[in-house]
Length: 578
Image (cartoon, rainbow, N blue to C red; front, side):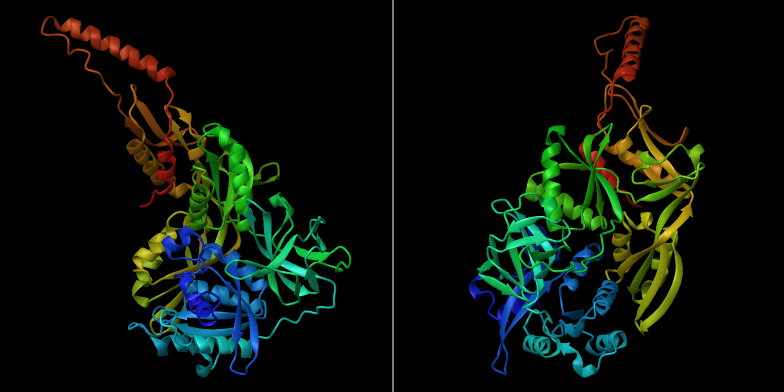
């Protein structure tokens, strides 16, 4: 749909047009999803003869990138609610709609893909009416593929969405909603001017950090950056100040002028709350500083990324990184590899817990190794989420079984229409980290959609599961799991490691342990050289002597030999599922 809007307003020349024009990352094109929101300015000539300037932000839809959506919504006056006519309303559509309604945005409902044979126009229109309370005539029928209804969409934007209310004479207030790092020009910040004017070479101040800079270049965002001498209230644009340190710009900050500063900053966005944590380590310890620089630059472009340094006995120095979900983790890993040439090892992802000691202390547990001795712990609390699943009635049974297996409880169930049901579960966040979303899509044949919000922390019977190789713990593979699942999870990891670890000259014992208790074990037998091959007959004692000598050598080797865990093993253990 965004491609058709760009075409219709001639923002992009026909020869430059390509599918997913606003998705400028290779990963986005390969996977067919939007990861980064993208701002662009359109000029639309309306039938009343006037020309309107529209600033469009194309946002992601996946639940893992909801922070991108919330930042974009804070900078907008209205939103197009695109609903797929062949799929109907999905869970993340509803959560993004509520975000838009909280910011009092004008909502324009658009029924997309009406040209498809499988389009359920009447049914999905009824769903939109129930959700929004809109009239049937207000729903625009459109197709992003053929271009049907694009003119109606643009007309509705002009007539229904109010223009920005800013005052150009007031002191400058500009809200930063995104930023990126340009290797030649430094940090580029994207902003929306709420009040005032911004001119080239103005001395500007970032309100939250208090830093002052010269506006070397300002301009508007087309497919590329277009410099301008000045920008007024209501405009969306970019500013380059020559900042090289990414820490000096924060998304959600306010830009004002030093000459005529504003009294207070604009209320930005909430601080991001990571849901999943994993350790990221360079393969070679010498690359630690390069990895730090790469994460800094990535954080500029992805404000949902949170990290801090940590060290591990097995992997050396690295970072504890917070993500919004498993897809987010996968994308960051891929971007580090492609954009910054950083090959990394990722530890088993986990969530944050609270541990209460018998002394009354409350500790935040980010990694299993932070957990105090079990004799010191009074209780451990884990985060719970409210999951909203929308699906067809045929899949209620398998979905309920999946959620019950993940220690979930059903709290609400209601029919949106005859063939769409909304189910609400309360689940531990740790249970959905690994493979929940993939399994949900598999058992519902792709029809179920899923969204979640954090609700609270609840007491739980959690234990630390250690993985030992020949008696030595591999701290990077430790995990916190519910006691009821510890044994089966430990068995799975041991079996997986048995497949992945290369055989040595000595026997390797792979064990899963809770404290001192071993709950699972696998053994990799030693590579054995046939030392008796040179004995052609003769007395049996000669063969026995050689075998005894070999046995002693193996025993000595086992006591001094160390087991190296290859990177592939760390990555494969992440993919363990049923």
